[in-house]
Length: 504
Image (cartoon, rainbow, N blue to C red; front, side):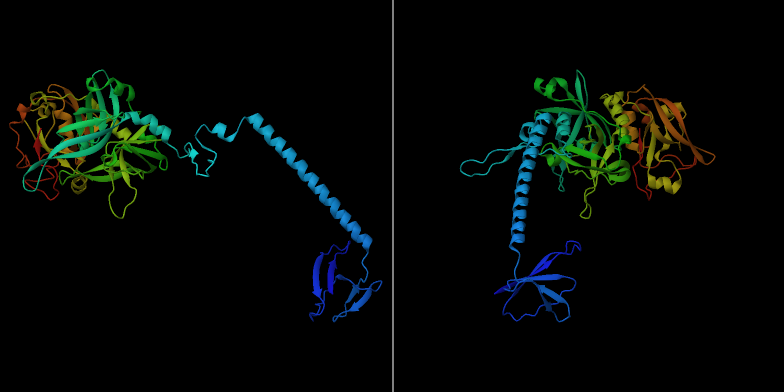
């Protein structure tokens, strides 16, 4: 026979109600329970009887449970269940009515409002085959609309050039790069890219968004800034191509903040346009960039990004989230220990140079202008060692040259041409030799005065190459270096290397 022990809560005391079952014949002793009343059901005697326990506590044995109390309890439970079911039904109906009312008011219904941006699930086929979600998943990081708007201004560039093997044999080579359209008029389409993309090219081919191609020519280059402008004749473009392309929107790189999103578009590995996304990692990074064609290098101030920059991306656009070009992808740090470090030329620094390159004319040799001087680059290393300003040290001045007439002297250091900073002899040569003889330019020089270099602007009217005949041919550094602070290079080779002196 089973015995049931019930811990019954006192109505006033509020103790817990718990159930404990003991089975007859098990031989298990009853653990004493303090401060509780245990009713034992199943006895044939009437009335409660005290049951002394081992701890002298009394347990009352109920030998005849009250049937009426049990009925009331069952009725109470039954009634409570009915009320619970009714309440649940009412709640469900009210919730359903509220939901449909909200849908009606707002007009929102999943698949109908998605417009394909979130996607809708097609019903399963009768053969229980799998189905796919239609539409693309657009999220806060989606830049497809920006890319779609900007892509018509981006181009792929393919250049062919001639290389020489170790055995002296010539063979054709091909390289890939990127660019973006900055100007369009009735005659030509102007495209910006890196100088190293087109330097030494025998031919240049541009591919537009509609996959049509056109031949391009170099308008102007600045090797030190690693910038170039190439030109495509509008007459060479198809009507459909003209309707598809557009001019890029240029942004101010000074407004760029570290941590903002950046989008790189370019002809990576020559496969065609591709998109990578990252962030602006740093600003004003000083990066020493090698020429690739020589042992010389140049320090550039660049934007750093973790957007993937690969071969073929050079010259492509680095965009902000508004689709404005904030940089020109130029360099990547390649090392097995390095991940995600790419660099771009800041757009604010590039715009003055681009404006100058766009306005350059393709001149014949007899039309080119010259200063009538020789000089060498003062690198950052030489500047620190000798205390000279970074720029171009003037080694010799032609007596019949344009510089002499303007008052420029041996020992002066050229720091700017027409307001644009110059840091290498190649920059000065490009700016001067791409200007017609007879044109007046502004040359900023730094001259030593009482042991201190001070800048001043000098107006110079360029002359032809005939004024170069009396200058040193570059075998030695012209002048003794006794004037205006002396020559930081001495004669012949110097321990700092650098560019050989060249008359121009």
